[in-house]
Image 1 (cartoon, one colour):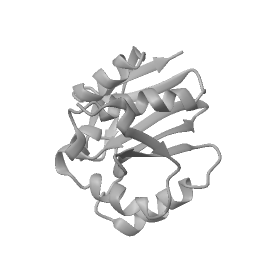
Image 2 (cartoon, one colour; image 1 turned 180 degrees about the vertical axis):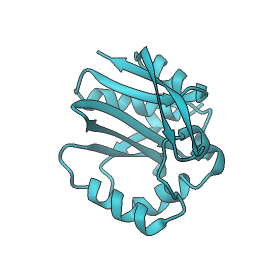
Image 3 (tube, helix red, strand yellow; image 1 turned 90 degrees about the vertical axis):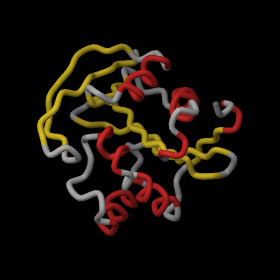
Image 4 (cartoon, helix red, strand yellow; image 1 turned 120 degrees about the horizontal axis):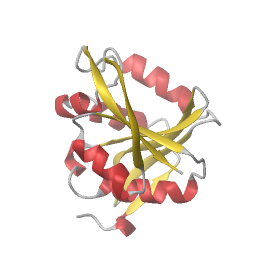
Length: 160
């Protein structure tokens, strides 16, 4: 496990996007995230989309660092009036409590409540992360998952 004190969140910079793009290319990670871009290999589309987010005041976007190494990203964004959480952890940091500790830290700086999280029905790791951080499952929905090219169920979590 990686100690909570070794994890730092900071505002992302344009140079972070290269590493973050590469993280989402991992086949298993993409599958578990499910609700991804139509073509996760399109680097120019990824950079274009995410560079706009860097200065969007409605998005609290943070890069996750472990010992000064980029380990992922975490963000709060608003969709249809609801504040939602999203995070992506480099596959090399899975199973080491990075997602849980980063989310706990993020929740101390992001004050939007209620805060929702949506997770694919079979992404048990992310479901556990949300639950360990105080989120409660409040329902489910179905939607088209680009990474699976199918409609799947997603669990909806809420932190009040």
